[in-house]
Structures are given as C-alpha cells and as structure tokens.
Amino acid sequence: MPSSHRRYGDWTIARIHQEATRLGPSVATLCTLILERRPHPEQGFRACIGILRLARSVGADRLDAAAERALTIGTLTYSSVKSILDHRLERAAGTASPDPTPIRHPNIRGGGYFH
Image 1 (cartoon, rainbow, N blue to C red):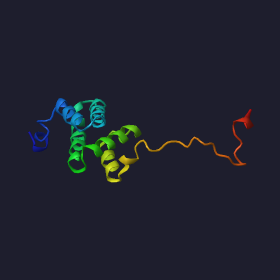
Image 2 (cartoon, helix red, strand yellow; image 1 turned 90 degrees about the vertical axis):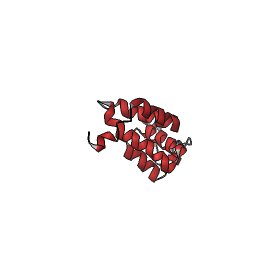
Image 3 (spheres, helix red, strand yellow; image 1 turned 135 degrees about the vertical axis):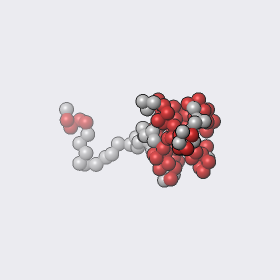
Image 4 (cartoon, rainbow, N blue to C red; image 1 turned 120 degrees about the horizontal axis):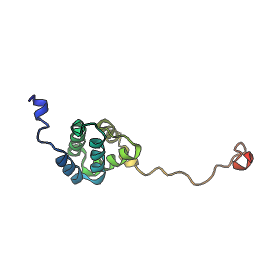
C-alpha cells in the first residue's frame, strides 16, 4: 500500500467521530455531515482529519466556533473552516442580527402604497 494510503489506515469512521466529539459538538456535526454526503465515507477522511488537526494550532474552542459558523453558512469543506479561522470569522458567528427598526425616508413607500 502506498505511504499516502497507509497514513489513513488507522482512521475509521468511529475514531473520527470520537475525536470530533471530544473537540466539540459543532465539530462532530460537521465531520458527520462531511462523511455522510460523500458516496463513500472514506472520501471524506482527509477533510475530517485536516479539520481535526486544526485544533492543534487554534484550540478546541476556536475550532468548534469555526465549525458552527461553517454549518451556519452551509459550507462543509476543510478549506472553508481554515479560511474562517484565518480571517477570525468564527467570532462573528451569531452576532449579526437584523435591525428591528424600520427605515423612515420619503422615497420609501411601504406596503400600503401597493394595495
């Protein structure tokens, strides 16, 4: 077996799920979705292992927040999670809330104009 294949020989779906659960619920959900959405779960091993490896450099809390952000925006790739971490976008997760006050301006007609 080539060395690139042997590197992943010790990894199983159960081990990936166990490691992801240890890092946080959002990481576990992200890895589960990555593995489920591939025709063969083994095709998602590299992405999941890469995401799990990110915890070494950024910590479990930041990784879980980045995974939550990735799930919120609907992206399920290693590169997206890495980009979220690189740009520190995990902190912005859940902070954007719509402004409840309506806009008042003479050029805005409102719903009553069209009835």
